[in-house]
Amino acid sequence: MSSNAETTIEDSGGGMDLFGKYLSIWVALAIIAGVTLGQLAPAVPETLSRFEYAQVSIPIAILIWAMIFPMMAQIDFSAVVGVRKEPKGLAITTIANWLIKPFTMFAIAWFFLMVVFEPLIAPGLASEYLAGAILLGAAPCTAMVFVWSYLTKGDAAYTLVQVSLNDIIMLFAFAPVVVFLLGISDIQVPWNTVILSVVLYIVIPLTAGYLTRRVLIAKRGQDWYDEVFMKRLGPVTPAALIFTLVLLFAFQGDVILNNPLHIVLIAVPLIVQTFLIFFLAYGWARLWNVRHCIAAPGAMISASNFFELAVADAIALFGLQSGAALATVVGVLVEVPLMLVLVRIANQTRGRFPA
Image (cartoon, rainbow, N blue to C red; front, side):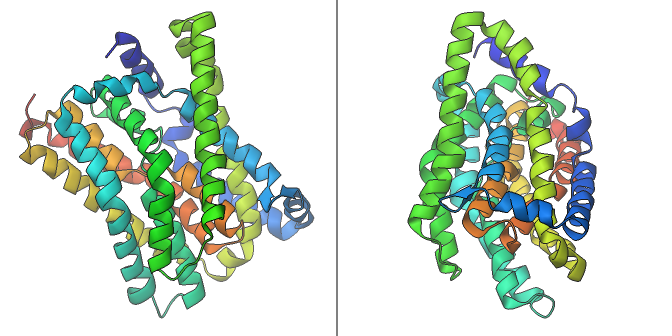
């Protein structure tokens, strides 16, 4: 891998910015702002909800593209040639992400939401929360994985290979996995709706990111792209995420005010799933004698969720006012605290892996 790829990731992840470091606090503030807006000025979200085409909310679609595009623009798909380098790490991450994680998320979420918490959650709402958990489990990883890789002294170039490969697989595997798991949960979603959401929130941003990267690097060079363009683009994702969450919670206000305990209940299976997948991938890497600089980021990639995509698809498939959308936002709320705990565990166990 080139030194440019390594520099790019280390620069972007070399210390969490204000937003990333306090993501859970920002989400909590967005919840408060959104609920307040929905209660005091309900006309605002109601008016915005009228701007839609083919049942897709135009304001939300714009915000979601703004969320996802900067992440897609930093992916270098030429890095995928690096699959020949240390294939064990890639095998663990790919299998964990696509053959294990979606199904354990379904099983764990179903057990807690439909069985353990059954007296506390109405059946219809529990099914919606389960749908949101399924979307989180099927979305492989977020761009913040680059930060976790940096904090665990991971191989930055190899992390780029893992993320790029997962994004390519996501193009083809996300829709079938989601439809299958929703189907066995008795949650019917038309195939054309799922395909539309994949095109809108994966294919279009991925293609736009790829073309933007190629054109700008050809015109301005790799250094300008990494040091100027990507840094200017950096604040767009967090700003769009916060505005999306404010709108979402403007619609979700009544649900939260009537059932505040539900946020805690949704968080339980998400936390269990995150720890399970991390230790599964991390332990597997230890058994295979994978180097720590590959094992730690690989386990982080396996454990984390592409919550921006999950939020987008929950809104597209089930609507802003759905329990599925609320469940994906709880995933955003718990992501950073959980991953920082896992970073600490990885750093404390570095000596058990090959150098």
